[in-house]
Length: 385
Ligand SMILES: C[S@@+](CC[C@H](N)C(=O)[O-])C[C@H]1O[C@@H](n2cnc3c(N)ncnc32)[C@H](O)[C@@H]1O
Ligand code: SF4
Image 1: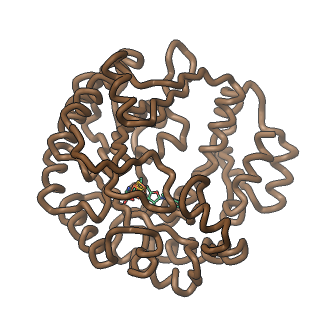
Image 2: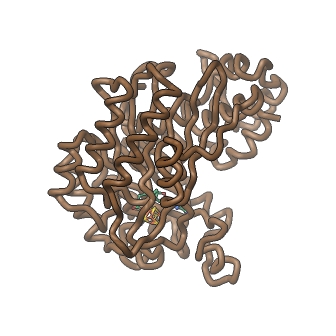
């Protein structure tokens, strides 16, 4: 575990552009055929950072995450200016984790050196698959060779890097996935994100799936693929610390831990979400998603926030449970009680323990077991009821 759980404060910055739209993806990402005015975005990011810091002053930033879209399309100078703006308005911890998401299509050694000089100290690469036919099926613009070359550049440029793979792809068998995973683990240093393909509404994959033209694994096969993931990763020193994230001990993504532990973070840029404690209340914020509309809002008002909800006790406690139980470390039931004003029903805990879906550790922490993770949503719903 890194740093104090109570004092962590993350800053998420969203870069909303990609070279092309992947057919499975429903992230806030947009393709533009004209050049992006990065200077204008820098000014708007700096303004929104200033406004947000005035709302949540005095924090010490422990992690920054430049996510997207494809942040590796940003010029290093743009990244540097955003990091400088954060440093001007908040104190930044000396051991701050600064992650940038990169797409293998836009990875070059000189660009990565520029990011490192700007203050980035960790990259997360969207590799998705390690064979060309799957990459093609996923609509990716890079080959497996190019992805591995990007991983090699990441390895040479940064002490810390991670990459993402998507599994439960059409026609994938547990044996094929186990081989791919072993290759991935050889290439990974300390961290891997392994996501089950989700068919998101509104994406081209959703239409193809509904029309029967895209066959994804059935429940039993998806479960077998999940089990293989756990077995292979644990056997090779990369156990899951979260339902989709694997790391060597101490190499967990500190920024994502902020979300899962229910800590505070600012959301900067188009379509960014934040959780800020203002005047003793937890605010759930979200900004305008459309990049150009976000720019105009920031230029007019100093921020692009379009949703700013105060979470009531139940909402806050449910969110804490929902996010915290994704983690292998689980949650502290006392913190749940402090947030919600009530304890989790001991009878429900007893039933779920008997079923082997949850465990209560010696220090009292409540956590989902390996057997419970595949049915996490049902476990959370049961405990929150
Ligand atoms: C914002 S993207 C990462 C960076 C970069 N845009 C890229 O794709 O290379 C975050 C990650 O979410 C995952 N992802 C996106 N859509 C998904 C889906 N429908 N199912 C499973 N994983 C998905 C991918 O692994 C992707 O790398
Ligand atoms: S997966 Fe990454 S590159 Fe593809 S559209 Fe989504 S954010 Fe962009």
